[in-house]
Length: 265
Image (cartoon, rainbow, N blue to C red; front, side):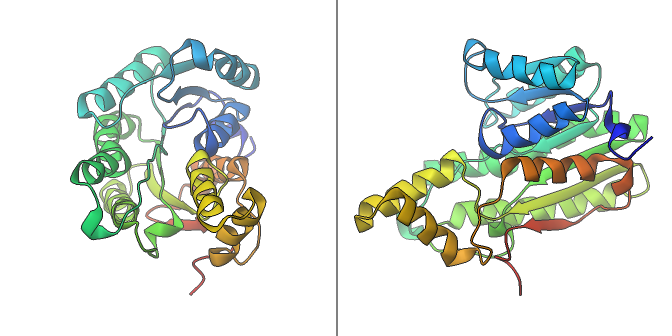
């Protein structure tokens, strides 16, 4: 059995997976033959075509959750739904994330709480709910989508940087707790990816500087990412799939960059 075939029949949950990075990740797990739960804030009818697409890749069951991850009880309910509908949860990818930018003195308190609830507290609630069943089966994969901003900082992003630095620390601690159990915990730290969140930043630069969207896109990219290319969501998905295979059983507690050289020391 190849390293990729080892995932066939596994059950993967990917939060924030109706677009952007999460969609790339859940697509790759479906292509690897996993049963999947994908998640977003849309209605079931709005994601019906994506659900059909994922099912065509997986040839197995696909479930959708519209849980509000800022709510601890809904995080628990998401794992309970996945366990009921898929039979178990072998792989949890904590991908859902939100952004808000402002200087620290102007940062609205309610925006800080919202961002930390989604980016950092939700992975805690989801992980604490799912990990007992992973321990029971002596196999599990916890993958947390951090960011280059989990390793370095940028101005006006205090909450985002705090949440992404925090998820790396959280993952490392869980990795140590789970060492020797068959459960691993790792972070992937992407650089710039053309997600809806990043496109909003590009549009703001375009408007503020009165330049074209394409010019703003390259300005944002080249300020940080030496490769001069955006990271592809499905490449991040392939990375997450690899970390979930038996070939990566001894990779744990890592914060692995895919950022075009952004965080090279």
